[in-house]
Image (tube, rainbow, N blue to C red; front, side, top):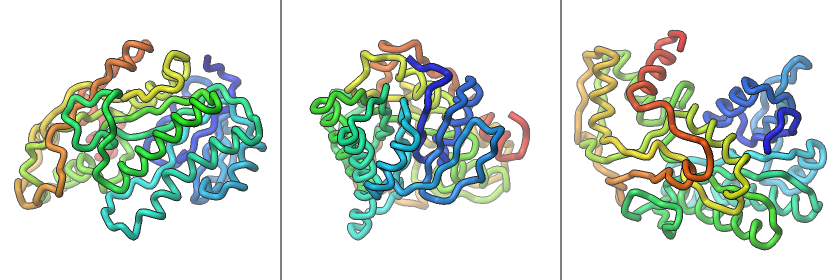
Length: 313
């Protein structure tokens, strides 16, 4: 069970989900939080509950030293190379970031006979690939990109460490996360920024359905699973539980912003192996915890638009 005095390590602490998770943990009163990132972070403040550490998780010795120094009781492994690249020359780098970092952390735990309460690995619902939705955890993964392939491989290894070495692991697979602070390279923030500026927007025909989940619902799920030993060793979806067409997202944002933007549907072709139906079951998570998604798409988009306009939310 989570305790306010636990030492919690968050990899990818500067990322979109990581930064929201750290803020949520602070709000809950946790005082021993360690944010690890490969790139240099802010200077530590003696009055801050967060310790900012720069480390390269691709290097086994750095990982060993990191765990020895911190002695974390909970590890949230959120760091990942999430590029959309389909260039085979990027595969080795993505394997290094998305697979070897997981191996380095879990192998260090085994080799050092280090005891942790829970290792939470952030996978991705993209691992389900060309399966027919709604995606459920008992489906065989069917990855269609370098990212989903490396995440699926890492998920299998996390299960191996649980089976062989009894490390209490949980693999969470979020669906499409959105919310304040998200990078402009993603569909929703890109669309919002164009609409706020009254600029034209080019996209596919928008008939794809997607299961979007607000970032606050994601971080509450990340915290709740740690209190559920019944999920140790399991893969668990983290989703809103219903899908919406991208065309409908465009319509909602247009109504909220009152934008004069023109959207050119079909200006961008669908990707090869485009997933047209993307809905993710959250039954397993809801059945084993008290977690429920609380922010529907209209509320989430309203808050995100307010944030990107610089308004308080």
